[in-house]
Image (cartoon, rainbow, N blue to C red; front, side):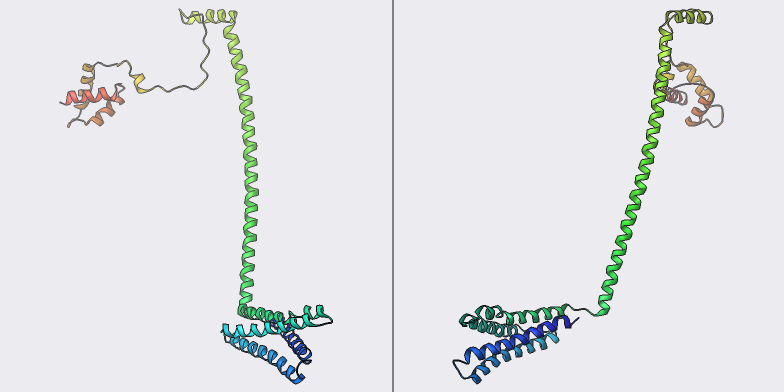
Length: 287
């Protein structure tokens, strides 16, 4: 994996250094002796190579120096500037020389990419652990999706069953209501018929004298339960009779019974009185 980033950077650096040296020798060789031009070219490439080597040493130690990095980029820019100047002053193939003028900058960029790869590189053990975690997460997600799909299918089946049952109940209720309506219509017709009324009156008159000839239909609808107030709307016992019964039950044993026991025996004997009247009678006889 390391060769995938370091080999392109080394190749680009070598091509850039050779190209820079050749351009400096050809360009300056016409103005100064060629040994001088060779020294200039080697100086540019040597400075660039030295700073690159020092940067690699610092990177291997986990360190970084901005000054060294700035010097290295300066040598790279200088080499690119020499190539651009040569391309602009060349009488032939100026476009071709200008097209390769970016090689020093590209070489520095490749070394930057390689340094970033080294800072983020992981060991095979860590990569295996990461792959295991990712696979486990994918498995859990797949299981969760399958569970959700199964629950959705089950809920859909349940709702379908409930809907069908509700529809059946509605059909039965509608049919029952129709039957009841038909029966009620028959009863209403029988009640409204003149001959039917006479026949019913003639039959019931012998059983209950003074019955009215009007025959009422039975009540069909909700009924309200009777309350204790309606049962005792007309008290069956006077206050004197109630006092006498309460006193008799209270003193039926020795010692005298408590109000709770007396009230239980009072109602068990079949007597009827409201709680308010019964307690008032208790107070009167117990005073």
